[in-house]
Every structure is written in structure tokens, then in C-alpha cells.
Image (cartoon, rainbow, N blue to C red; front, side):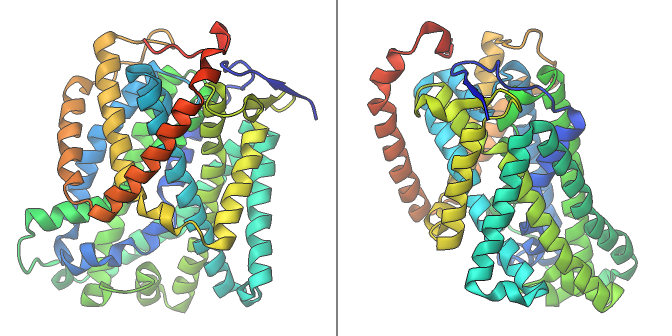
Length: 447
């Protein structure tokens, strides 16, 4: 296999992802395994009950503001690394690198967690995978397969995303349509009005159910006509996700009522009541398909962060090697495979999951601020940027909303994040001399 190293350049990558492929990737990563348990979450069903859709609406509005900022920034900075590139271009290498580290850790921890959910649910359907050795083989096999497909070409990875997105949506849409006829009005009646503090905490939980767009934007260097494709794909995907989430919550609450709280398999329980045992089995298969789809999407996206770090001198140059035949960052893909496989099999990803809450919010905060700054400076790295309406209002409103949600973050979450930031800062300054020696053509512009 031949390869070419093109650090500081996007030239070796193939721009082959269109609107539908990128939208499918966003949906695929956003709708992971969490939606199959989300409706019964204690902070949602337990505290808010029938009023839970209010938290979904609040979260959707906040995410709408964030999405506008991401869409605008994506149309202005069409580079591999997505949010990492936006923040770096707006504020410089150090803030950009911190944002990139948060982005990569967020995706890596989530991939390991979802791979565990995938393996656990496969074991329920095929008991042989309950054995430790068979389970490890399953995890390695699936991750290796997805890595191989994405090394073969971004087009193949994108097509797999589209297929798995459709497959994961089928059982969810079937439950929504059939379940709507089984909803009982008394289960949707409010007992009391939800308090702002309860809605805030529930929104914190939900913001991560809506998260995923930031990961899907990592391969921006492989998106065709990114100034138009990125905004359109983001709006299309997040519209689908928002309406689906609200519909699922209403159906689950309307069917199960008080039984929804604490259910380990809320959607399977609701499907069982509506469609009988085969419905519950269908949703169980849906979990496997959905988590597999998520792993497909994150395998396409997250290695691009490693590629971007190498391109910019934070990692050795060989990490950003691009295969001359397939035009994919194969070294970054292989490294990501080993990291996720090791974390999943060992179970050592749990400390990383702790930072997910605050990392995602801080990443969104940085992206919204970057969008504001890029717009102020009229940065257009891809030529004429796509006009995203409302950005001048969305950025400050999104920042206020995120700061409000950050008030619900725990001391433990903050302390873990500070530790990660300290390690990232050390890496930044250790690599400073190396990055200064990079040829001018390989340095990223930051102004």
C-alpha cells in the first residue's frame, strides 16, 4: 500500500461527501444507543413526568442556536478537524488545541461506551457473546471491519452511514406511528408545572442526546462544496433528530405512564405493549443496529481529529499520512481502532465519560464564540461563505444558554476536566519548538 504524507495540507483527501451523506453521518452519530433508554432517565421521566417534552423543546432551542453557529463556522472554515479548526482559526493554536482535545476525547469515550452497549445487546440476542473471549472477539471484529471500510475510502464509509441510518430509523419510526394510536391521554396530563431548575438539569442530560454534530463535522476536509453542504446537512439532520426525539418521548410517556420511570428498556417495553413480543424483539434488534450505526459514524469522523493534530504539528507527521490510492488518513484510522478497542475491552473508558458533560458544553461554547469572531472578521477560507441567517443573534444567545447550563455541572466533572486541560497544555508547550520548525506551507493560518 502506498501512501503520501501531506501535513499542513488537505490536498491528499478526497472531497466526496454530499448533503445526504453528511446529514446521515450527523443523524447516525447523534442517534446512538442512548435514545433507547433516554425516555426513562430519572431527571427526565422521574422529575418532569408528562412535562418532559418541555425540556426537549428547551434543549432543541438551545441546540438550534448552537447549530446555527456551527453551520456558519463550517461554511467559513471547511477544514478537517471541524470545530477544532473553527476555534483555532478564530482564536489561535492554544484555544484550538484545547477544543480539539475535548472533541477527540468526547468521541473516543463515547465510542468505547457505545461499543460496550453494542456488545451487551448482542449477547442478549446471541448468548454465545456473553462469554468474555467471544465478546472481545466481537468488539475487535466489528471495530476492525468498520476501520477497514473507512480506509477503503470516505465514499464507502459515507454509504455505510446512510444505510445504517435508515436501518436504525425504521424501528423508531414504526414505534412512533403505531404507538400514537395506543397513547392514553391521562399519561400525558401534567400534575404540576416543572420548575426552571428541573428543566435546566434535564436539559443538561438531553444536550448530550442531541450531541454528535460536532463529531460528524470532523471530516470537513472531505466534504464536497462545504460552504453549502455543511449548513444544509446540519439543518436537515437536526430537524429530523429533534422531531423524532420529542415524538418518542410523547409516545413512551403516553403508553407506559408511571411505568416509564426507571425502566431499563423503555422503548422495548412500549413496543411490547403496542405490537406484542415481536415488537419488543424488534426494538432489541434496533439497539444493536443503532449502536452499530453510531460506531460506523464515529469511525468515519473521530480519526480526523488525530489527522488534524498531526497536520498542525501536535503529533508526529506520520500520523497524518494519507493513502495515495484511497485518499484516506489510514494511520489515524488504525490508531483510533487500537485506542477504542483497548478502552472498550478493558473497561477503562469510564473516567473519560465523566468529562463528557462539561467537555461538550465547553466545546459548544468555544464554537459559538468562534462563529461570532469569524463572522466579525469576515473569514471565508472556502471562498464565498453560505449565508446562515440569524448568526449575529444566535451566537450571543447560545453563549448565554450554555453558560446557564454550565451552572448545573458538578465539582467532580470540573476537576476531571481541569486535569485533562493541564495535560493538553503540557503537550501544547512541549511541541511548540517542533511546530515552529514546520515549513511555512505546513503552518495553519490563525488570523
